[in-house]
Structures are given as C-alpha cells and as structure tokens.
Image 1 (spheres, rainbow, N blue to C red):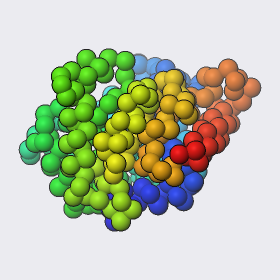
Image 2 (cartoon, rainbow, N blue to C red; image 1 turned 90 degrees about the vertical axis):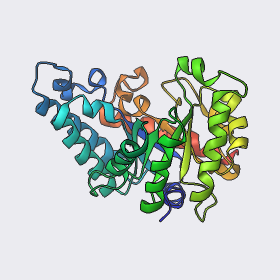
Image 3 (cartoon, helix red, strand yellow; image 1 turned 30 degrees about the vertical axis):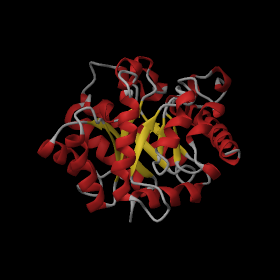
Image 4 (cartoon, rainbow, N blue to C red; image 1 turned 45 degrees about the horizontal axis):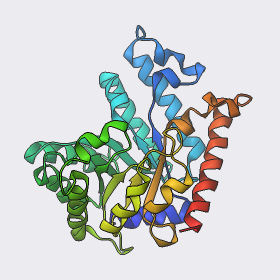
Length: 297
C-alpha cells in the first residue's frame, strides 16, 4: 500500500497530525534511567535503559498519534548494542500500529544510496521503517535509489527542504532561485510518480515551522507533498506558525515534537507529576492544539 495512503489513514484514525520524535538525549532522561548519562557504564546497559524508556513512551502514546520518529544518531552512539536497541524500539512501535519515520538523514549516491534505502525500507520487519528522512545535497543521484525502493516497498521519504535550525539559511537561502526553492521544485516533481489514492505523494518534505513566512509559499510549490514539520514546542513554534503547512481540511502534514513530549517532566508546569504523567499531559495539550489548528484550515 502506498505510504501516503497509509499515512492519511493513520491521521484519520487517530484524529490528529502529531508525530513524536524518539530522541533519547541521555542528559534529559528521567532519573530512573540515569545510567544513560554515565559514560563509564557499559554500552549494553545504557542501550537497555534507552530501550526501556522509549518502549514505555511508545506504550503511552500508542493509539493516540499516527507516527513516531526515532533519531538514529542516539542509537548509533551506543554501537552494536544501540543498533540492536533501535531494532527493538522500531519493532515495538510497529507492533503498536504506529508508523515509523526513521530520522536518519542519509545522503549518498548510486549503490551506497541504494544500500541505505534497502537497510531502512526493505529489510526485515523488525528493523524496517515506513519512511525515512534524506538529504538531497548530492543531487538526484542521491534521491532516485530511495524513490525506487519506495515504489517497490510502498515506503516513503521526507527530503530536507527547509530545516528549522538557526544556521539553515547559510546554504538554503543562497542563490536565485534560492536553493530551498530549487529543492522544493524537484521534490514536487519526484513525487509525481508516487501519488497515492488520497492525492498525496510518498515523497515528503521536511519544512520547519520556524520559517512561518515560507510555509505557505512552499506549500503552494508542493501541493501534493506531505510535510514533516519540526520546530513545534521546544523550538518555539506554536499553532499559528504551523497552520500554513496544512492543506485544506487540515490534511497533508505531520507536526513533530520530541523534547516537549519525552521530557515534559523538565517543564515547571509539570513539576508535580511523574515523568509518565507529564508526558501524557503534554501529549494531551499537543493533540488538542493540532486538532484546533486543523479545524481552522
């Protein structure tokens, strides 16, 4: 089944466009997982604690949001034990009927790009993601192998177009037309061959909510492209900033929150709660906000 159709079905089933980033920052983990902060502890123990934390998070959000987005770097940091933990976390998310967007940001060419695509989108079920993030800096050679695998496997990709980090303008705003606009045009073109029955493509775009003025312009340039919108919550963007990224009826976008949900216990507003209850309360608020935003589109 086409990724865009599965995504659309998941959003309709849960009634919201939230994607929860599974970014296991050791410094931010709840106290019961303090071993993750101990660089002298064996990698195996840190990986096990990371896995326990994220599997518990998955259990609390399952059935409530359409997708999760695990960040591969924090697993790779822990070597082979971390990669094994990634596999089990992905398996837990899939078992919970969550779409898995692997935040891997891979970018290479030819056979190497194909190997990356096969590794994350065409491998054994426990390791496989529904979609991944990719970096298009090397050009079409770095994207086309992923498109081939998407067509073969019913998978998706999210191409970095306009990222939310403060330094993104150094390259992305360069030139005339700007690099960001050139990439957006190509993303729309690449997506034409992977349209689902819902009218959206399996080729998505990462477009940060911290660039509100550009969201509407990029949405117009990519009308059939699912957006993955970082920058909400901990990075400062709110409901008003993300609205231009949606299509009519609140369709066509996922809004990511990582630290704002996983580490809600660090928020003074939740100081009286356990980390589990803080996560639930923060998720309740995010779902309510995004539903209101979608209704206003």
